[in-house]
Length: 133
Length: 133
DNA sequence: TTGCACCCTGGACCTGGGTCCAGAGTCAAG
DNA sequence: CTTGACTCTGGACCCAGGTCCAGGGTGCAA
Image (cartoon, rainbow over all chains, first blue to last red; front, side, top):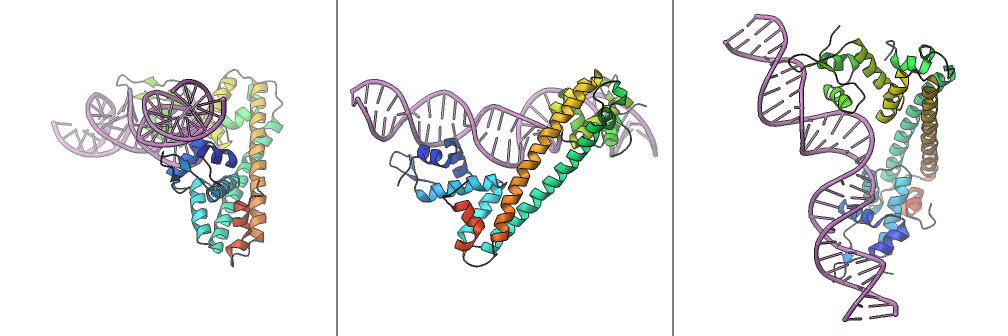
């Protein structure tokens, strides 16, 4: 099984430019080349590219993924697990932050009649008021 | 009460460059100037700058804030409320998305013993497997 | 008057994760 | 052999939301 960059990209569900971008940025090893200079890929690279795609879905940055790939190559299960846990931690942080924002917005919206004097609009007031942080 | 850009920035808790950036980008009206060309601000501008800061905390983009400020000037309570509701909607969307990610990560971490053969690591397997997303 | 902190401008640069482009070369079907 | 689809390269550009810089001009206190 040997793939051109276009076939690889298609099978992995990414754009061709993205494959080259990943190569430039060390997420994929430099591809083998034909005499013409065309890149050639095998099953390994397809797996790796799909790994990257899945990790991105789980919220890992490309930087994270570079580490994950290195850890995976070293078969360092403990550190892979730790990395996943750290990522879980900051996903949780982001959720908490968004929930705080959500409840702030909800309170304001619920208190706003949606009509009448703008001085009575709690949304505008909350944003304008001197009080608070 | 009359403030230099530095005093304004300090009292609003933003950087001087940010104030100029907001002016360039239409979030603050062009400031009044001294004969020297120095910008001069009053209480109104401080309020407006704080409004911007608070709206950002609530998850509004600068684009959103531009609209919010316009709506506020028009005292259009209904549309302010609607904008807040839209924003709430996409905050909720982001929360849901992150929760999905969180539960995926949790499942994987819980299933991973944290040691042993890398072939048995569900995290690595989930990322590598053909079965996929 | 000197010295230092402050302010002015336009424009470059940053992060992340790509995307797009021109101009040139290559592959394969017919 | 031609044609159309594919690939190559380096580099520019995109988004948001700023941040930083050089090379100047000001304000004010001692």
